[in-house]
Image (cartoon, rainbow, N blue to C red; front, side):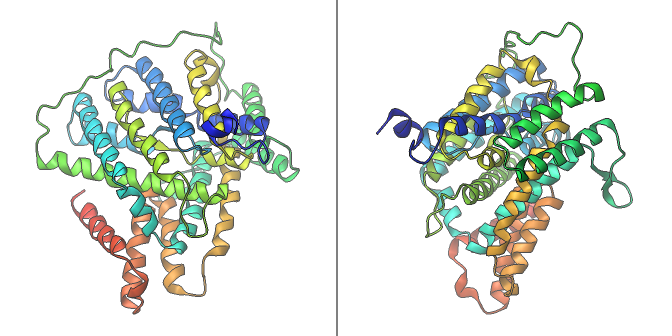
Length: 433
């Protein structure tokens, strides 16, 4: 057994180094917006933006490399785009916590996360989810990813009368449309690395459009920013109360099901799911997530999660931890090449995200659409995942609807104790969360 096979699960008989590297580069480019967006979101709390860029890159690299060597899967991890908003806008602005107190809460959640992962609680939850919801989660995540791509380019925007609608044909919108069509054409023509090339070409095309902005005196290399302004800046004062306990519980619920849903959807696309529905190395994947969240809190970052954008690398042929290792190395390189990666406009990634959505829709055909007690909760899972802009909320509502419809149609034997307990916890979370 070669070193790469033992360390990263790379099988030279069925996998190619070049394919894995291209897949990793594609995943990185598709999710590289996190390097610009996460610091901007967290900086609204008063945290140092330069330090946040460095912390984001280090936390993503650490968590993804842990996943590469522990789980040997082609997935990538980074600070969650949903939970960073919860950190900045809900905890700090609405609930009145300081960012130092919020980091302390993130640390506690990370430790609890690690403990329940060690004792297989998350794995038991994963195994309890019925097959019909697994397929729905995969398809729903595809729709969610596509919606993110359309929103990022301004093709779909908020509308007061209808909630959402078509946006104006701005340069960013036009670049997004170009990226989507280019991705579709390249993939239809079976061009190797089509999603990767669509991002690169769209970034270059964005220069004359004014969407890709090259600053005056631009240099491709810069030294990493100092993280000392936010490193280990915990404040535990005033946190021993019921309100904080509910915040930790809410974070756990969202993080558990965000990760579980993403892992299930990505595993379906990778083709590694066993006949009994289990996923190889899933505990290791969850543990790398939990350790990453804990380490991220020390660094000054919000909660780490597995990124749905990993599907773009999987679509390029990524099958092993070699893909994740490549992503992790790109995050390390980004510490010194931040001016280069910050040039990629978010609209340039729209094509890759929409095409991933297209590819993930195929799991719908596995859902038993003739049985309403199966198709109804599957539909609820998919549509609410998009409309609530939350993988976790879609899963929660899908499981709740599954339990209710099975109970009231006399099919309660298809339920298990874990699903019933989870449903009760979801109801409590929606009431008190």
